[in-house]
Amino acid sequence: MILLGTYCFTTFPSTTSAYPSLPLGSYFDLHKPLQYSKPSKFTSLVINGHRRICDLFDLHQEQVPYEVAWSWQKEIVRDKRAQIEKEGDCNDTLIILQHPPVYTLRTASTVENLKFDMKNAPFNIYRTFNIYRTERGGELTYHGPGQLVMYPIINLRTHKMDLHWYLRTLEEVVIRVLSSTFSIQASTVEGLTGVWVGNEKLAAVGIRVSSWITYHGLALNVTTDLSPFKWIIPCGIRDRQVGSIKELLVREGVGHGRADLHHLNDASLIHITHKSLLEEFSQAFQLEYSYKSVSSTMLYERK
Image (cartoon, rainbow, N blue to C red):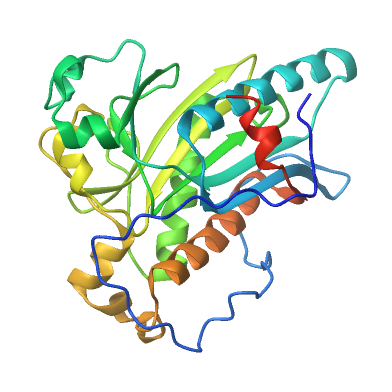
């Protein structure tokens, strides 16, 4: 079983963004509670007028090693399968965090999407990056500081037993975040997964489903240093680029018309993006959050 505690998770050192920080203004109340009042076009299961409970592990300020989060997800899935077999249902779970620099690819992925030899990697890659083959869908990608990663572990039997619907809903969550928070108009691309702004991919989606329980999830580039993507062909797509929220705001102009974004630095960009992701996710899947905590000792025991 997953052991919960009241201890704070250990904060890992952060990596400096590729873009200079902007001064933090007084506009944003970083402690303002989440609001769930906006109307949503999403539909999901609501029982007797109440939303399903979702256990939320909010580690969005932490850099959790990939292998630790991966092992943790698989243990949660095992526990949920056992609970469903015994009780017929279980709470959903959402983990939100960042990772230290890492490349991941699915087990059957070709190494041709790596622009270096895994057995003889350049020193800066060998020293900095781990590479993991996982059971998720999708192709090769990069995770690192400044990228918010969401791992929903939910029972699709109580939502909709349709993987296409689930993938499109995850994408729509990100599209709504970009629109409502940053006035960035994003979209999907037919035949491809993820969320795009023009020719640039801002969010990658890769999932795994076991007995209709989901794990793995989505990764949204917020203030991410995009240079590690130059060593790979992201998601195996050669004719498109990778972007980030911060890069768009810097390059295209402050907030696409949102003057209140002028004072955002990296930390506050991460914060408001994380708030919006949680809000839109709860709307999409009609969930009510139950905040949980986990100690670093307990979490690392799962590595």
